[in-house]
Image (cartoon, rainbow, N blue to C red):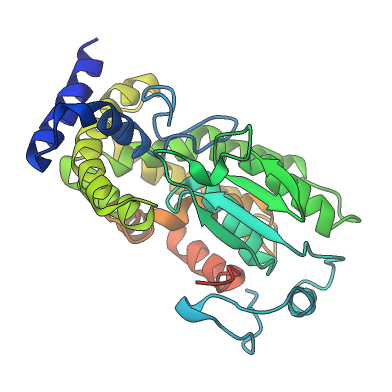
Amino acid sequence: MRRVNGIAFLTRVAISMGGATTTTSATQHRLVHAAMLSTCSNSNPLWFTQRLGDRFGLSKPSSVPRCAGGHMCFSANAAASAAQEVHPHVKSLPQDVVLYQYEACPFCNKVRAFLDYYNIPYKVMEVNPINKKEIEWSDYKMVPTLKVDGEQMVDSSDIIDKLHRRINPENTLNSEEEKKWRRWVDKRLVHVLSLNLYRTVSEAFESFDYITSRGNFSLYERMVAKYAGAAATYFVSKKLKKRHNITDERAALYGAAETWVDALKGRQFLGGSNPNLADLAVFGVLRPIRHLKSGKDMVENTRIGEWYTRMESAVGEPARVGV
């Protein structure tokens, strides 16, 4: 009860600072919850879903034309040709792919890493975390949601499995080692990351500044989410430390990074000379935090930096089309 009242108090403070009337309190309360990246789904949800109610080697062809913002801009036929040049085993690519996402959602970034690696052009529909109007057409009210040639796919791991089978029909999916480390990403790594994003008050503000600057927020929503959301998640994260039996967030982060490097056993990637789905999952989850304090500390204090740089090169430029 004290936690709920604390969040309500933070919401009232944010409202009073913005000069809003009491009639907006319900909206602002939902805003604080949504700012936590709620409805970012997976088999083991992150970003305080349970606690905060409804609501984080190879190169690409250099000749690909670009639209505004540096994103790839080409036809599906050109995309298929480019992907087969980089990945000759790929049989066919989807023609129309739309990703409904939150920009900083780790599970959404897992899907994007897969799409980028395989040069599958995709459009992005940023979901407003308050009204979710962009996915009102779907009974599934969480992200990531992917539309592939009209077919709806949900849950990041399931999306990746289905796409992988589609473009690699002759390739046996997932060795036991690969499965093990993909589960580790969802059950361990994402929790360690979340606790590090909100480890201190300053890091919580930095994280929410990143989240709200990339999410589908109005200016007013962004300000309330940044300040009330950062404060709320900072306090809730302390309770989650105990739940996940973590005493030192940074030590846990460094330990996870070293655990992953040890799993490589001297290989360039877990998949050997090329990344496999576990490599892409770890890279996708880490990519949003790479230039935040927690990500910088991780690279500076562990051996993961060389692998991460190889992954950046292997995955290459985003395959996202349009602005």
